[in-house]
Length: 176
Length: 81
Length: 252
Image 1 (cartoon, rainbow over the protein chains, first blue to last red):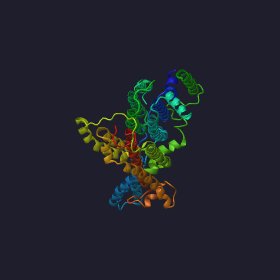
Image 2: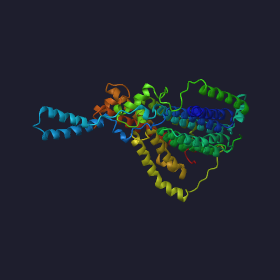
Image 3: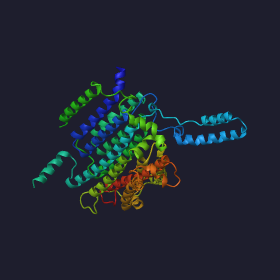
Image 4: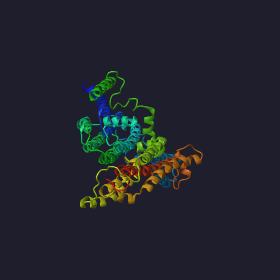
């Protein structure tokens, strides 16, 4: 039972929020209340997408730590260049060594440079739904701004923002 | 991804969504809508979506609430339900 | 109406809850093997972002490089919303009823606090833009914070004080120039023979850049500059139009 609640919990929350937003959009009379309901609906959808990108236990945020120096191949190549430079100095000191020794020094220099680590996918949260939701948030605010501008014009023209009075006035306008 | 932290934020989130729809004073409804946006931002930051939470904090709580208050100022401040 | 809507919404909610719980198709919360988390493309983005582009922030890399076409049209959507609000609401004079306007001098404490804070906020917005490659941030967040700094000036002083610093014509021009920068960074590879928005080929042209990975790094940065210009000017323009009912004279 505990396992069942734990595994399906976020879906219940987002269904509840979506239904609150849907009820607000349909049942409320005022236009501004309808817009608040629309925003609640939109943020509930964004919550759903973000919650399916979660990986549990050790998952970290989707940003590589330490500016990605441990993981990047270009930084590893720069370190390998430094390592070969040091190995070259050692070769100068051991110049009259045998060719096998020379090869051993060369191998030691290469092994000293660290290979870039590959990020383990289970350690980072899934970045793809985050990207989609960034677009969704910004488009949502653009839509909200346009809806508020249109409701200002409606108020200027009809004098009210309540839906039933608006319908009466619009129908009276139609029959003139 | 801490379960008890999620429950605490949700304890405030669901009533604020209902209250934003039920208040008759539209100025108060815009402010409670700003509170709802802030709590959503906290929830997403706790789930590991830091970029999304940053954008929602700037957009939802900063800019969106100000647009609503500006519109309510020029139209009616009371609503009938 | 409310009871009827409540019944319908309750039925839809029950249907959705049944679909989530009992059919068993939805994966458990936080499952690493779910179809969203375990798919090929998500794992490619996690493992190959640093190899292809040298950017530690995976979300910025996917947003501006792998899915850059999407972001370009999102910027166009913001621009079109600003233009649409401008064309709906803008008017030159008004004679109907309007809310009473209070003309007061700004109060002492907000005036001096905001006077010191606004430069810091704008520098922080530029920091968020530039550091978006290694920390949460990027073009959108920096643009919204920059637009919000002008809204703060308009709230403490007059709207006219803010419009003197950021006039309406400059706002619309900046919004258009931001999209031109984005499309320009996308079109430059076409002039060199590659596809649209393939920044890797620009390492022949940009000064001081020698590998395709660093060309993609700087291409992403240039694109984010364009996004920030558009977003900041449109956010302030929408506020100025909504707060003054379109007159752009007095306001909230």
